Length: 333
Ligand code: CP
Image 1 (cartoon, protein in one colour):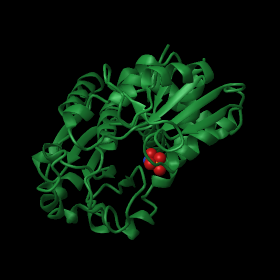
Image 2: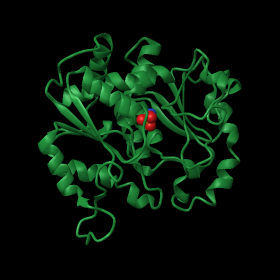
Image 3: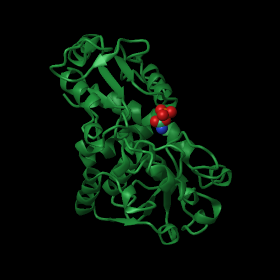
Image 4: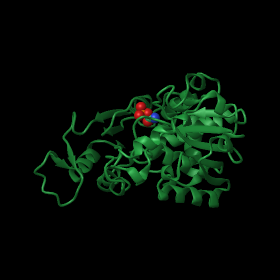
C-alpha cells in the first residue's frame, strides 16, 4: 500500500505521471475513478482551498468525502504511546486510524506544527501516526510539507512556460513578510519540488536564521545531484531577483526562535521590505509570480503584483483540484 506523504518518497516518473493525469482531469472534469469510494478528510487546522478541492474532487470522480475536525466535530485524539489518557483526549490514533480504515478508502490529513518545539514538530507525528496505523492510503494535506501544493505549483509553471521540462529556469523562493511566524511547510515543499524539477533555485531570505530545516536543504542538494540545476542561499534581494523566471513567495518563522517567538518578531519586522512589489518584479526576466494562498495583500505582495498578468496564483489554486484528483485516482488503482 502506498501513501502520498511527500513527493520525495515518489519517483520522478511517478510524479510526472501524476502531473500528466492532472492535465487530463483538467480537460475532462467528471470521471468514475472513485465510484463507490470514500475519503475521510481530517482537518486539525483551517482550510479554504484544500477542503473545497478535495471534497469537490472526490465528488467529481464519483466518490464521497467526509470532513472530520478532531476536537471540534470529532473526538480529540491522543498521539503519544503509553500515555495515561486522563486529560482532554478521548481516543487514541491507533483506534481512530484503524476504524476509519474500515469505513473509507483514503484518509487525508492536515495537521500544522504546534509551534512550541521544532525538534518535536519536525517528526510530523500526526501524519506519521495515521500512516502507521491506517490500512488505507494516507494523503498529506499540509503538515510540515505541502506536497499537493507542490504539484499544483509545478503544473501551473508547466502551463505558463508551455513545457513539461523546467530545467534551466531561474527559480527564486523568497521569504516575504507576515506579522506572525508561519509554518515552513510550503517553503520546504517549494524548495523540494523546484530542485526535483532541475531548476536553478535560489532560497532568498533575510538572514541565515531563516534558512530551512537541514532535512529539506539536504533533499534539495540530493535533488540537484540527481536532476541537475542548482541550489543557492541568498540574502540579497536585487541579485536574487535579477533575471529570475519564477518568483515564489512565502513567509515563515525562523527556526532558531521556534517556540520562543518574542525575540524573532523585531528581526522579522526589519524585513517588511521583502514584500514582492512591482519594482522587484521588474528586475526579473519577465518572471512569473505565484503564492500558495491565502495571501495578505500589501504585506506579502502588492495589489499591483497580485493583479498583474505575471501572477499565476489563481491558476495554481485551481490546479489543486486537478492534481488531487490524480493523486486520489492513482492511490485507488
Ligand atoms: N494553499 C492552501 O492549502 O490553502 P488552504 O489553507 O485554504 O487550504
